[in-house]
Length: 293
Image (cartoon, rainbow, N blue to C red; front, side, top):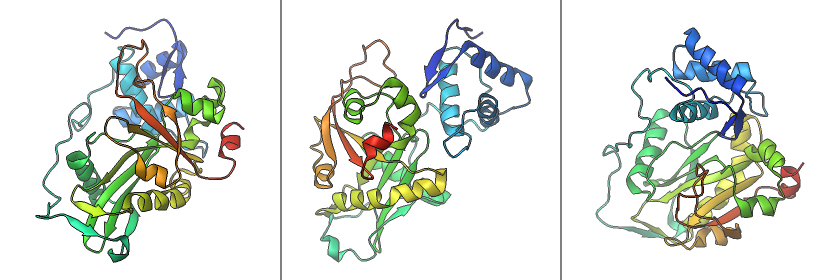
């Protein structure tokens, strides 16, 4: 039996009161929403958890329900299809590795493009590339997200993805001028560049900064089409012991300081993680004013 809990808890940027938790338990117990996705939809509708475009925040809710379940605050039904939550992604062999590196200039890459992930095939290719060749591996991006494949006429060059921003970052919040209440209401306007990969055999000078520039030009429109609102700020975290962040600086991202080496779920300040450099990119003039409105 899960521990019922005696006080409110905050997960995924939302505070769940004792009454909220009882409501969710009631939705689960009723059996009217038999699957996890159905429970998430019903929870969003009942608690009024919606995006600024008045769409249900189902993805964030599903993650929140898993977190609440992990804390013993409720019991979810087993996944209908035995999904891979908590299991390591198992890549297949869909990406052919060439026998030699590809060295070229950007001007020599015919049909160079940054293309939105649309189909299941696109999604599998993105997942595969990240799982096999990105040092962090594959994890589903949190919350509202936008993924792109980097391609040319000769095939795949890499992948990049943006998802929900970090809940709390001291130097970022100070740069913006956020109070805790402002952060809570405006956090959705910040996107995190969670993954960026150029395949290890690709050797094209300035390609990384070119990709970042193309993403910055189009991501507001792409996000508005998909979610009904326009983000105004991008963030990323560069692990200092591994990378210099040169391509971000070359693309005019702003270096604002370091993280404190704690994860987003570290409530007791005892989970030491690699220190990362925090870089930001405003997508429009007056981004800070919009974020503090």
